[in-house]
Image 1: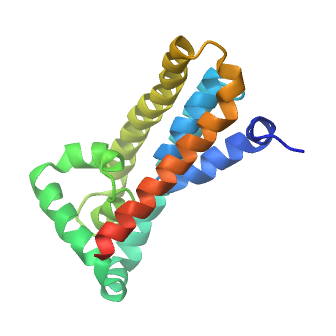
Image 2: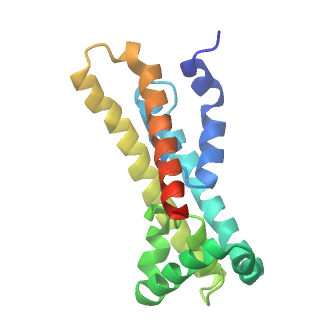
Length: 185
């Protein structure tokens, strides 16, 4: 029988990359925790999260540049995010591009709408990379130090690894579902 630990050791980096292409905070926190437990290597977690986060937002920017108006017309819920992003972009241009991945619910819509603006590809790419680096390091370290704090509380953390990893993933998935439910209400 495969354990969660063996699945993470085998497929963890792939799952991390795929997860960070989209929103990815939950996956990155779990990967940081897994790095603390020795299932993954923290430097690789950060590097892969950086590339996944950068690529995901860069693709969203380019899709927005090419198909943004059509997507807004087709998905009315996206228009609500577009209004928020445009207002933030007008007020906090550079800061928004750096921090958009930290704004829950705007991770995909943000770069898409920014792609529809007059922000140049090079400017977005450089700020996107800087933001992705800050994000990858801070969120991976949050997961890593979460494991370190748990180790202070729980004497034999190894017996709880799978439960903790599942709890992180279920909590992140539950929060995502709750936000979707609240948006539809």
